[in-house]
Image 1 (tube, one colour):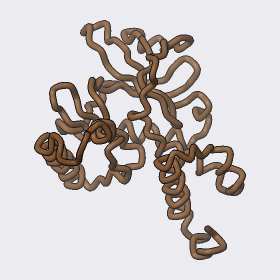
Image 2: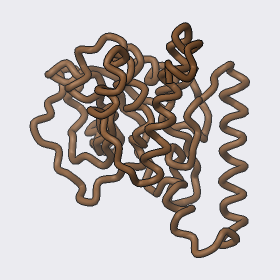
Image 3: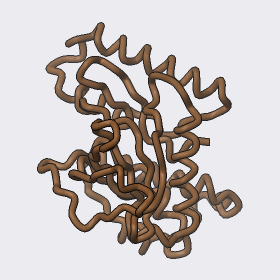
Length: 231
């Protein structure tokens, strides 16, 4: 990139976004690129590559085929009301676990930064910014944030509404033809537009809006997820 576009030397944000976009495109083409390959190709960008490449790894949509039990995860004393149950989604930045709020006997989702990244100040700040930003956006199309904290090992987490459903990406893939359930998908698109209009009215741009980052609940509720790249 730097040989073809030397002007990127002065715009690190553009360079990191371009590399992340290539990574995402190769994943869509089922080429299975690895982080190690990108670290070798861009050795001077390793510190920032982890956050950009991890952020496009479809955290919510990468559902595990077997709902992995959550073992070895301990919450701090101030968060004992939450009981972890199992991992329901996993990605480059961390994982999402199903937990139970024992005070209200309700299931919630706990998003946790990977223990491998918890000592990176930039990634921790990005993760906490996502929690604060999502918590500030109060709209039916954005999952409400309930709480935040740290695990005993120091990994930060935040807790939000648990969405029971499928990603819009999977629902679109499962269609037999583009016209199947057309009205349903147009309605989902309209809900996404309303959600984004609200975010834009607050001066916030998602920057990673795609079907994999939209969850459609069992009763038709449409939620825009993964605000980690938002500004």
